[in-house]
Image (cartoon, rainbow, N blue to C red; front, side, top):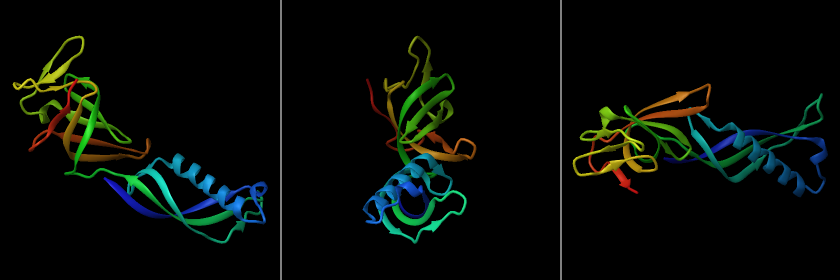
Length: 178
């Protein structure tokens, strides 16, 4: 789910980027904010940082004594992406194993769907292994699958989420097949 958030941030601007007119300063603050925002990746509370939408407020700058840089407190609006338990998502299979599949959903790389949560699907080994049910519905690499999220885990060291998914429910399963 996409969330609209308003966040405070501190932006450091080197002295050489300062300008009396203010236009170049605002641009430098925005560029530094975008760089910092992109490198942050995600937080447990807000999910993955996706985009800065507006720069709402630039506070008064404070000069750092030893470096000469100027610290500006800013307030901005942005978009984040976070999944929740019980949410229906679409994932694209990128890895298929005997015991389940790994999917990507937006910035989330590891959404795991276990074979135990795929009722009626059986593993079919081979050069290009698949999961198939009696109706010949297939789950294979590059298939988009509609699933329900049954668990989420925040991995602090990697600064990313992992999720467990299930096909147990109405209207869940592969939605595109090759």
